Every structure is written in C-alpha cells, then in structure tokens.
Length: 170
Image 1 (spheres, rainbow, N blue to C red):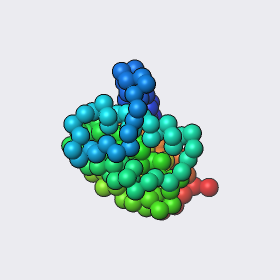
Image 2 (cartoon, helix red, strand yellow; image 1 turned 60 degrees about the vertical axis):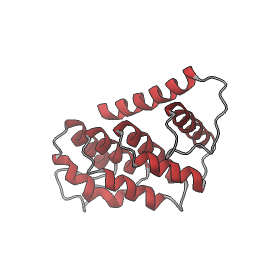
Image 3 (spheres, helix red, strand yellow; image 1 turned 30 degrees about the horizontal axis):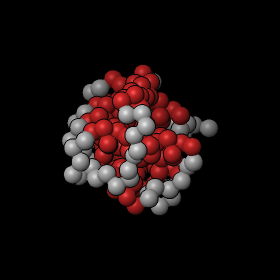
Image 4 (cartoon, rainbow, N blue to C red; image 1 turned 120 degrees about the vertical axis):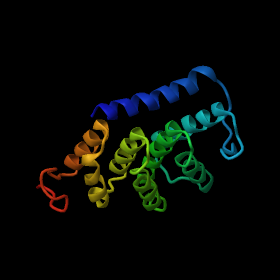
C-alpha cells in the first residue's frame, strides 16, 4: 500500500512541477514526443490531459492515445509510470481499454520494480480482473512493494492470495 501512496505522490509532484514552473503557458496538443526534447512540454501536456479527463471523463483522441503509448515505451522508467497512469483513464474508453490492459500486462515484466507496481495499479484502475493470474505471479517478485501491490489488488478483487486465483472469495 506504500507504493500506492508513492505513485500518488509521484503524480502530484509531476503535476506540481508542471504547474509551478509554467503558469499561464498555453498547452498545445500537437507536441510530438518522438521529436520533442522539451520535458516541460511533455509535463504540460500530461497535466492538461489528466486534468481534462478527471473533470470530464471521455475517450482518448487518436493523437492522445498515440502519445500515451509513446510514454509507456519511453526509456525513462518515470515516464513509463506516467504513461501507465494515463492508461488507467482508458476505463472510460471502450475502444482503448483492451489495448491499455495489454500495455500494462507487458509492463508487469519491466526491469524496474516501480514500473511493475504501477502496471499492477493500472490493471486495477482498468478493472482488468482477467489478469489476476499474471498479477498472482508477482506475489513472488523480488521487490517488496510489487508483492504488496499485487496482494492488495488481488484482495480488492476478492481473491484470497492463499487460494488459487481462479477462485474469488464471496
């Protein structure tokens, strides 16, 4: 559960950094993550999208979804975590939800423990209960926080971690 708090703090830090340094900056939606080296533009875009999706849940545009996937493929683990966080908003997007689940499932095997833990939490946000067996395999992860988050998500879904994942408790 500590990692849940840490992820929340990371998201808040990213958002505060974006807000505190660039108040009044106009965010353009055409910023390309492939060619942009301006981290501030990326942070501004993430902040604006997150705020918009929280205020008015809606499906992603094609451009937004392309950028979210680029974040999830970034070489920086912190950026991958931000991408995973945004993938959680695909719960409001029936056309992107299954792809978001697949992205998060792929990142369950990331080399960075915080990315694996974030992938678990994203799958929880997406209510991807069909991934319970993949999450159960992380109960034996080398990282304590990954194990804790896997346990917490499985229990939230009604599974007893001492029993096979295929048998949710009532």
